[in-house]
Image 1 (cartoon, one colour):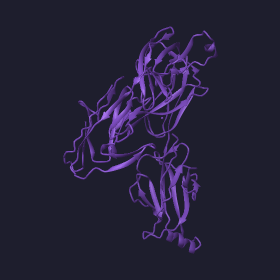
Image 2: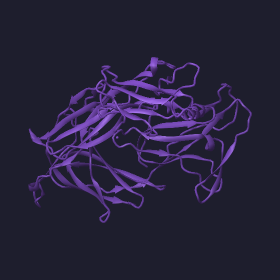
Image 3: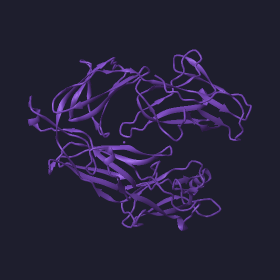
Length: 469
């Protein structure tokens, strides 16, 4: 149940309750925002005096950690009117129109959060940026608001990049050429700490990989499942080998992954060794498969590690290769009438013909809203069109936004509110929710959300589970 209150906190009627029913992965340019405020009066005055009314803006680009100057950094304006490389001591300077302000200074620090400065008095600021390979934009405030610099001399900080690199080997020292390595970063999303998928890189011919331009923080990495590319293994009738995922430093499941704490300018060596295992043919018949709107297959091992199988649409079956172990295979289609299903299989030392995976309609979750507003102003309305029909939206349908966010950090999925249907649909329904665990994300442009519950479960602070069927 979700309750809405206005900012005054008064509780008054309007009846309806929000009940939830469960039914059957950067290249970062270091950018420092400065502002050029070039007023028309100054420009006109400069024009009248043939450009003689100018002054010099000077600065130094420095390493934000060591405070050492950074030579050969590019400092430039967004409109490309100004550009210069710093010298060997990190210095740069521009000649700009002279300020007509009472302070007599042409340059002022105006926004510490955005690292923004301004000079002169134009109403259209022009950003000034700095960058150099190996450095990033600092994600922290610098200085104090309205800071000024004598003689227009400023210090521009750039953050040295962090690097995670390593080598993937197989069978001891043999390079695992071509294996894919995935990076995860620890981030706060909507108040919740999550491991968020980052970039994926491919190991080179020496088995080496490298993640560069990383901000300070916590990271994890793992190898994706990789099939042996030895030509001998491709001979018909030969035993096929593959390499299951490995979570750095050497675990077989996600819980065994160790966090890498990376500081600014630090380089971490993270080597991974993968182990080859015999793989066996797996075939799982699929019933009620409709692949017109897309079809995905998720294969999860006992401890959460991920493997890959695919859909053979001609034979209406899921197939591929897996090593010995127990697995849950889940299939999901997309679109307005999405379906899903799952089966459990066990692979031994021989090919497996699994049980039929039957796809059933995904769950629709209706959302009911109880309004408790103290003001007596009537609800507004607004028009909306899907290109075929026009609708008038009123009440919660107008101001409430709700969606589901999966707890699956490697392959995230979710669900959103169903669009209105003719003739006058004001209902709120989270449509086509596949089995899994989810966070409810809900926001409102009117009042605030006092609570959101499903039975005794507090959905603002706890995830919930959607079961198959």
